[in-house]
Image 1 (cartoon, rainbow, N blue to C red):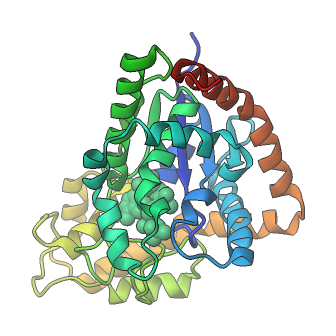
Image 2 (cartoon, rainbow, N blue to C red):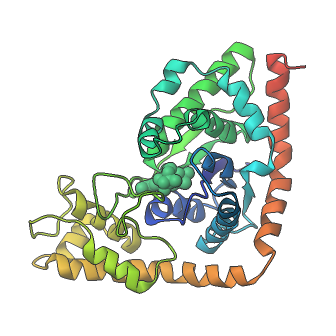
Amino acid sequence: MSKKRVFSGIQPTGQIHLGNYLGAVKNWVDSQDDYENIFCVVNSHAITTTQNPQELREKTFELAGMLLACGIDVKKSNLFIQSEIDEHPALSWILDCNISMGEMNRMTQFKDKSLKNSKNVNVGLFNYPALMAADILLYQTDGVPVGEDQKQHLELARNVAIKFNRDFGECFKIPEPMIPKVGARVMGLDDPDTKMSKSAKGANHAIFLLDTPEEILRKIKKAATDSQTAIVFDENRAGLYNLLSIYQIFTHQSKDEIEKDFEGKGYGEFKIALADVVIEALRPIRQEYVRLNAEKGYIAKILAEGADKVRPIARETYQKAKELIGLI
Ligand code: AQP
C-alpha cells in the first residue's frame, strides 16, 4: 500500500524557535518514515509582511539549512522553495475566486498580523490563507502537520476544496490536520498569554534553535511564572504550564512522573533542569547547522532537486483545476 502524503511549510521570517520546532518541524522529522513527505520554505508567504530582499534571500537558504539540521532527510522527504513553483500563486488565484469574503474575513491570524504590521496591511496578507490552501491542495495532500495556530487556515483549505470539487468536478484531495497533542501552541517565555513567534520583539520572548547554551539558560531563568511554588501541570498557571509542557516533550515523561520528580523543589531547580534538557536537545542541531553551512552550494542543490521532484504533481493538479473551471 502506498504511503499517505503530508505537506507542510514554514516562513523564512526569522530563525526557527521552539514553537515552530515542537509544533511542526519535530513532528515532520519524527514521522518521515511513515509518510511521503513534502516540505516547503514558504517565502512567498513571507512577503505578506515587510522584508528586506537581500535578507529574505539569505533567510530562505538559512531556514532550509535549519530544517536539514533538524533532521529532514532528503532521502525520505522533498524540500523546496515555494516561489520556485509557479503553480502556487496561479492556483491561489483560482481559489481566491471561490472563497467568500465572509469566510476570509473570519481569519483571526489576519486580524492579529494586521495589528502587528499596521503600516503594511496589504491584500497579500488578507489572501494568505488562499495561498496556503493552494500550497496544500496542489500536492493532493492527505495530512498537514502544523501547530494549532494554523487550524483555522486548514479548515478554510478543506472548505474551498470541498466546494470546488462539488461545483466543478473532482480535483482536490481533502486534507486532514495533524496537530500534536503536546506542543501545538508554545507560548512566549516573556508573556505566556501570546504564542511564541519569530517576529516578536522581546529579547526573552523565544528560544531560537541556534541560541547558545548561555542564552537558553538566561532566557529560561527569566521566563515569566507566578508567585505560587508547587511544580504542577495547571493550565491556569500559564507560564509554568508552558515550561512544563516543553520539558515533557523533550523528556518523554508523563505528567505524574514530572510532578513527582519536582515535588518539594522550587522554580529555580526546575528551570535549571529544563534549560539542561533544552540545551542538550538543541546541541546536535546547532552543530549540524554549522557543518552544513560549510558545504557551499549543498543547500541550494537540495532545494533545486526537491522542486524538480514535486513540480510535476503541482502541474498536474493545476492543469486539472484550470480545465475544470474553463480557463482555456
Ligand atoms: N508558538 C507556536 N507553537 C506551536 N507551533 C507553532 N508554529 C508557529 N508558532 C508556533 C507552527 O510553526 C509552523 C511554521 O510557522 P510559520 O513560519 O509558517 O508561521 P507562523 O505560524 O506565523 O509562525 P511565527 O513564528 O509566529 O512567525 P511570524 O512571527 O513570522 O508570524 C506552523 O505549522 C505553525 O503552526
